[in-house]
Image (cartoon, rainbow, N blue to C red; front, side):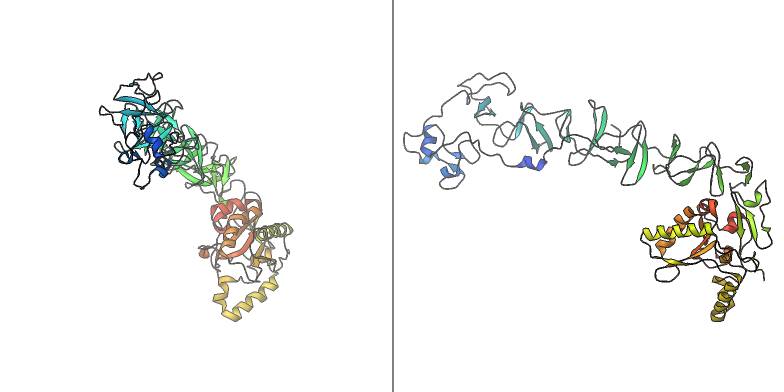
Length: 512
């Protein structure tokens, strides 16, 4: 069928096939209270499993009851012929049999079961007679599964004894030749769907078979979206059942592995453009993603003015604050402090190149403090060991004392790596806060640090001194040091850039 697929089918479960291998028990409708009674009715040498056999009649326990050699002279009678025992010479599913006492071969109905006798008068066993199967005891199989060793296949024999084909029996499919499908694809014309039957014969569901997906009802998905809980991803299955990849389906992009892109950038070689796919999988448009702008068609802008002509992005798509067309976004000296103009607000600048006046003494910014307390409360709620104490605003004088204590203890070179000289500390702005754990130490726990990278921006903060950015910020990385920037925090955090990089102002070590 030239298909490789995955499947599932919402059909009733089938009994475990192993059960079909249980031995056939004797027909209990024939019972004798003694061997004398058996002999008088024409039954002798009754083997275990045959009608009339019972353990009580098998005196020597050799598996043969009422042996003829033990019958008194004249007791063993000829077996009586009856309608139930007569040779009908007709197939089992034919009209009611016509008794024929003299027949020696053909179909015979005995004790409620059909048998087929060969020309020598012996019952045929473990083989097919047309569409009917004769079991090891000679009885025709009905309403049951049988395994044929010759064909090495399972079959299901219906109530009339004929084998099922082109149909389902529970979760199992019988093909046109009656064999149960195993390890293969089948097309069911009734349901108009493809299914995959596993090696045990049951239909696959909620899983992949190659590039094809089998739904909960076993049908192969076609021209539809499916969510795979194992991979926690959406996929689109095309009309031929294979998954889409490196392609768009409406506003959604399917990556090379078939997964729908979410919260990530993708480059489409067909359109030769970058796109950003949001958390719901749809592409962003007429919006900023960090320092990059997505146009109305979703493409990332390059070498052009965007957002109402207010900003210019370079050939990499990056917007830098000093490219703002409507304002001088270079660092501006405001007397007591330096600042740049952000997209929404004025951003106060403090680093080893841009100091604060010793007279700048704003105290803790109330908006920033309120946001920081909410952040602490959320982390505590999620089980992080965060204390209620923190390090916030420091005046010029307080910073001078703190810095000098570090210099006295470790020397100026070492102190400059982690402590700001007076006038160069962000804490003097009232916008910076150090997170402290319940143990009284600055928070360095990896999981807490990752939480801050992922969620601090939700409260208007950025992690100011990022790992790997020491040459830019001038300080060792500090996962506990947060700086409030307001509405633009999420865009800055998403960019992975420092404030120096994002706004395009100088950083690094002290100039002198």
